Length: 214
Image (cartoon, rainbow, N blue to C red; front, side):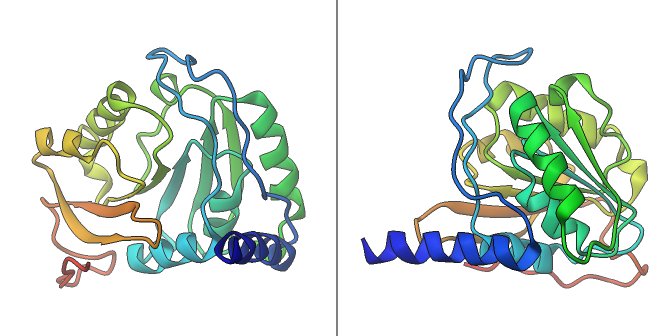
């Protein structure tokens, strides 16, 4: 009970600080999209999103895609960084409308925001360099996403933030990605940040020394 109250307080206060409304969950028919494997929407704690952003180290040259962007919480956090743009992709029209409203209200944005009401398998994500996911879909769609990213590695240094990584085994079929960070959240949910291992430099062309954390 106390833990639930703390999580609720963190969610509400985080929304207040950014001047958005992203609290709560939305459940809908999961059989949506080309692969019919979309998952119900559930928010991630503000502090958890901020931690992954810090680890991913976004720069002004990055294009960020939030896959399964829901009400736009992660989108808004990334937009407070200085990146080229932040794109949220969400299959639910209802959630897209909420996310667009939050994007307009966001306090102190530093980057442009685009919200697409689309199936991720049917929209172009080829210019992305950072991808954020909170287990938004199943194995088939994840495999499609990774194939798209892997075949566009000319974009340079790529990071994939995969929270609640229930289908991380799919990454084993893509040798171009390696684990940069790995840890578990308080609920036991696994968080993995991958990078493309063909480019072991950061955005400034300097050698990276990223280790696995637990």
